[in-house]
Amino acid sequence: MSTPHALTDTQVTTELRKMTAFIRQEALEKAREIHLKADEEFSIEKSKLVRSETSRIDTEYTKKHTQAGMSQQITKSTLANKQRLRILSARQELLDRLFEEAGTKVADGVGKGKGEKSYEAVLKNLILEGLYAMADEKRVTLRCREKDDAVVKKAAEAAGKEFKEKMKGREVKVEVDGKERLGKETSGGVIILDHTGKIDINNTFDERMKLLETDALPSVRETLFGENKNRRFKE
Image 1: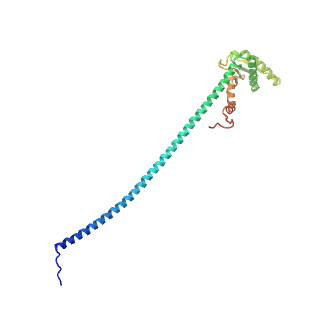
Image 2: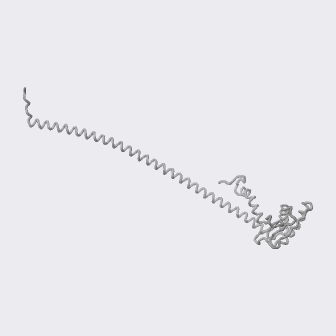
């Protein structure tokens, strides 16, 4: 049996270098492997973060876009409503002024004594209307302005005669109230009361103007603004 020879210093040094090179190579490969693994995990986490942040941004953008759209719609609706209200207000002011001027013209005309014959004729018809409405009454009272006493009495006499003719001889006593009067600010006309004084027909010009305003309003709107009187106004 042969005895192994002892390694020389040179051989030992060579073997150590080989071992060192092998270990270093193993370490480099392991480090490369770890680095690749780390890069892979980093890329995965990075993709997760990017997707998550992108999703968050998209959600936030969608939310803000929706809010902006709603805010725009609210602003648009608010402006449209304000514009509509301004138009309605302007139209109502015009209507109010129109009827006010009409009332003033009535007051400045027949209602203030200008054209007494015409005023007497109007009063007769107003009184006659009340007599027909209270056809079962034997006595009625007229309330008027103090300044109209004379013309109202004439109109009442004429209305009583016509009522008797049209109602085949039925008579009604018509009196002018000497105690309670219509205010001086009243445009004219009369209030007809039954014998108890509890039932009355307001045939003053002011009241008739109110009724006319209500009845004529649809036609006036249609004439002025082109509104169909059979439907509600829409902007």
